[in-house]
Length: 374
Image (cartoon, rainbow, N blue to C red; front, side, top):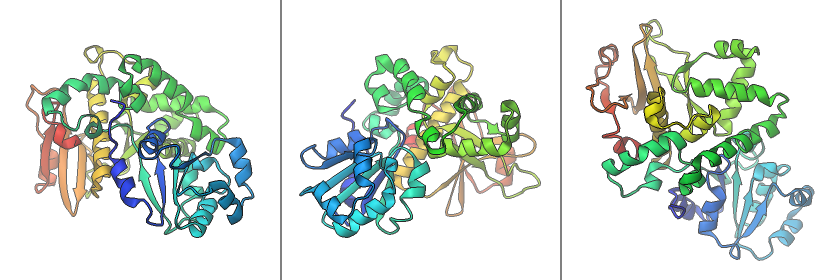
C-alpha cells in the first residue's frame, strides 16, 4: 500500500516547467514529501527544508546571486515547510523571476502562514494544490463496491493517513502520536497560543459533536472564554487542515436554519484519537456520526480531485427536519441522506422535497457509497 499512486502526481507533472511556482499544502504527515520523492530523485532535485535553522539564517539576506550559488545547476528545487522561512513569498518571487528555467516547488503544512506570507507576493506566479490523507480512489482504484465495504471498519476507526494505512497493525499507536505531536504544531507556532489546553478541550468538544450543528456561544460557555476566541480557534483548525465546516442551505430564512454550521474532521482516525476511542464498530454508539464524517470528507476529496465546482451544505428547517448533505451546482440541487443501516428503507424528509420539489435525492449506504466517494 505504500506505493499507492496519488492523484495529485498527474496534476503536478502537467504543470512542470510552465514558469509557475508549484505550492502543495496539506496537514503534516499526509505524504507531501513522499509524493515528491516518488516524482524526483535526490540527485535530480535540490531539496531544502524550511525547518532547518541554518537554511533559514542563510536565506534571510539572500539576493539573486546568493540564490544562484544555492541552487547551482539544479533545474528542480524543492522547499519543504516553506512557511517557516522569513518572507517566503518574496523569496519565491525572486527565484521565479530570476531563474525562469528552474522549476520551484514548495510545500507547507499550514495555510495559516502561507496565505499571509506567500500568495500576495506570488500573484500570477504560482499554482496551488492541496494534498489530503489517502482517498478511497487512491487506496482502492480497482475494488468493487462489495470489496470497499469490507474495508470500512478499518477506515471508520483509524482513518486514511498514509502511515496508518501502510502499518495497520500499529494504527492506534501511530494516530495517538500523530494527534499529540503534529496536530497542533502549526497552530501553536503561528499565533504563539499561550493556552494549548484550551485548544485541546475545544477539539474534544468538536469531536464529540462531529456532524452536529455547532453553537459558538455554547462552546464559549463550556470553555469559559469569549465567543470570538472560539471562532478564531476553529478558523485556525480549519486552516491547519484538521476540521472543515458545512454551512446551512436556505432560501427561506423564516422557515429554515441559516446561520449554523456543522463541523467535520478531515480524518476519522484523528477524530477518534482526540476522544481516545478506537473500539470496534459493534461496540460504539457513534457509528452514524463516524459514517457521515467519513463519507462527507471523502466526498470533499473527490470534488477537489475532479475539480467539481459544486457547493456543499446541510439543510434543516425550524421543525428539526434535516438533510445530511446537499450539493448545488449550476442552480441544481442534489440532496443526500447518509445511513449506516442498509437493511432499513430510508427516504429524504418530505419537508425538504416539498420545499424543493426539483431537487434530486439519493440515499447513501455501505451498499452503494462507491460512486459518491469515487
